[in-house]
Image 1 (cartoon, helix red, strand yellow):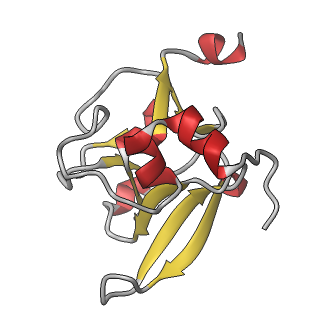
Image 2: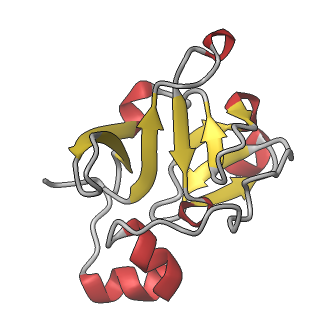
Length: 138
């Protein structure tokens, strides 16, 4: 599949570093509770570490007590691709950045109804937090 942002494997490795490369490009998962944004409540916009695309707003972040950053919705539905994943002996929905194809985490339908019922369970290492929309625009 062709993405708006494409790099060679060497370029991805240089851009991301070993840990982020393992997660974003090799579909890894960071250890629970180890991510920088799991319990972070700072306001801002969460961007894809692979391509800087704004994906999630802090207004949709919630504490799911799951060990990973959790969001009830992306900034726009077309920013996230969904793929069926059966790699761990169960059916899950993998989520990727639609701009660069980087693996972000998984989507579950177990969030509280008042939040829309969906939990975008995201590896912190796949995100960068901009403190405000104005810093995102500059």
